Length: 269
Image 1 (cartoon, rainbow, N blue to C red):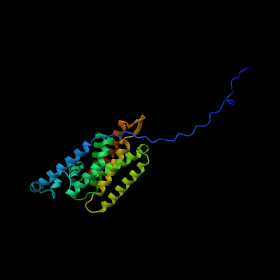
Image 2: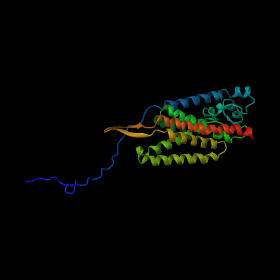
Image 3: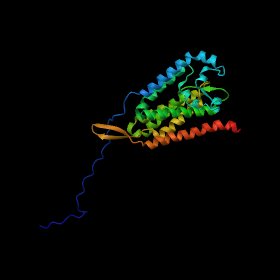
Image 4: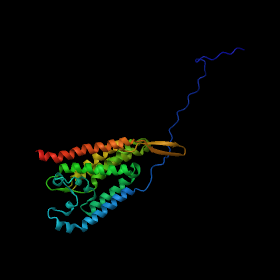
């Protein structure tokens, strides 16, 4: 019997395979104690105690200031225009009352602990300082006379924005839970911004912190990729260091330019 090779038309066609349904897997997420968050809370609390203890002394020694907290580094536009640029950051560790510091430190632990684990300490510290700086710049542009502003809420709003960006950029890893978590964050932000109409709340500082945190996190937030194999899946951060530097540079350039404009503009006019 002669055998001839089968032509492509005569080749047997394998039966179609049923599509493989995607499977859910559990992955190991970053863990660890958020020491930096706790350190920021501790330092802020110590500063507040020193602030209260020295209030009478500073008031006696510094009649130039209407409130002793101003001498410690509160945000005051007129003093920044005189060259006291450190006041773009020092308001982060100053608070006006016990409820003020309690609410801010509670929010810092609530949002900061998980962010520190996910971002890493150095990137988290950059986020905190850049968001605080951005918020204080926008606050500076809208302060009038000798009004002042203090509090860590500018940085905390940046943390909330960064959490939203992180969840959005890693929504494939978090699955369906990401949408609900992002929605909750949006509700928190909107409610807090609505509260900004209450006298005494630094509305523009909150917006500035939100924008600064959003901008930095968009470039610097961890981008997770699931790696490994059964049963030891884990997530690895594929974000390039140059992206983190880009995010930080953009925040500094944009809000730094706004700060310079706010300092120079009254002199020009």
